[in-house]
Length: 335
Image (cartoon, rainbow, N blue to C red):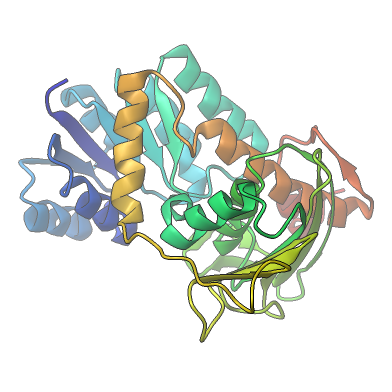
């Protein structure tokens, strides 16, 4: 195929990251952007040399013949933007994380893309981080034996940084299906409009225990009292592995067959560029992106299950049958 024409919905900071990545791909051209805020819209268009920019993204979808659409708006608008983009005739959509704010929205997005033969990708670009890609490779080579436990943690809330933490644990476990989840959250400050999700509620602290169908277990910690570093620990039957440990190499492992810590060689890359290149390949090869809509939904289901477990004070079996957001229900005082 020739040049892929791209339009971006939402022209904030993350949109500039998308634009930067598209600009590094030879057969891709960013042709338009859509943004409600006039000052931000005009600056984005000027800085990137766009011939056209729009206040209403539906106008952009109707007037521009786009091959790829990037959705870089606030989470509660993702469902509508992805659905309308899928119906506009584009071939691929890159939607920022979190995919949606509840499973009902996620299902609508997946359905719209399937019905219109559109490749939907969710912006979990850390799947392309050299240390995490290599960690998965080494796990599959069983350099630490069979994985028993994965532990990931970071700052902020589950639908913010936590969407990356959960996605990376799924990724390191080869996207196995979850079997059950137990979770607890702290909502003492009743936060809404927290950090970069101004249209959502956010918990102060969250902990989740995940059991996957292959027997692997995982723990996620997010929030005020969680270890604040974006970090993963993998425990196997014959050793341990650390990813992003402060003051250490980005990846290291130790096993019964090593003399202390081993530091693998990593190949530098640009994860943002790689996720866009992967979308083009998925379109051309008529296959799913490695961070597809369904993969994004799998992570979202785990997050919703942590909320539901805390709300109902019980273990939650999969599949989760709650289509709304249990955290929202708790914050609003609903049963």
